[in-house]
Length: 80
Image (cartoon, rainbow, N blue to C red; front, side, top):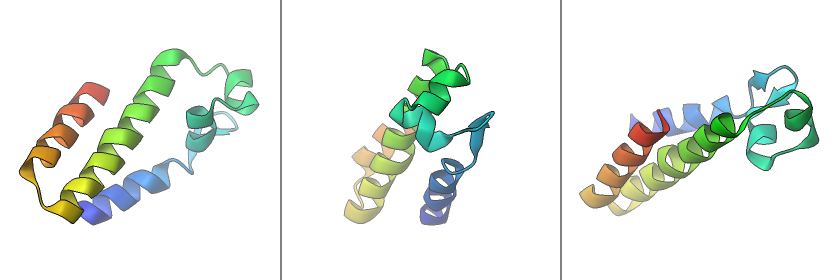
């Protein structure tokens, strides 16, 4: 179930974030994102969601370590 949720989170980076800018544009700081007025809080949220929501969640799933799951939880809470 968690792997499906992580996959859905990855798919949300393909969707439009603001105007023509997708989530990947926001992460990369692309000209499209800058042109659409993406501010720093939105970029920080996107990075935290990627690092903790995807990165640490996948590490926790692969290694089956509760400590990594709690780090993913804390980071996702910070992002929210």
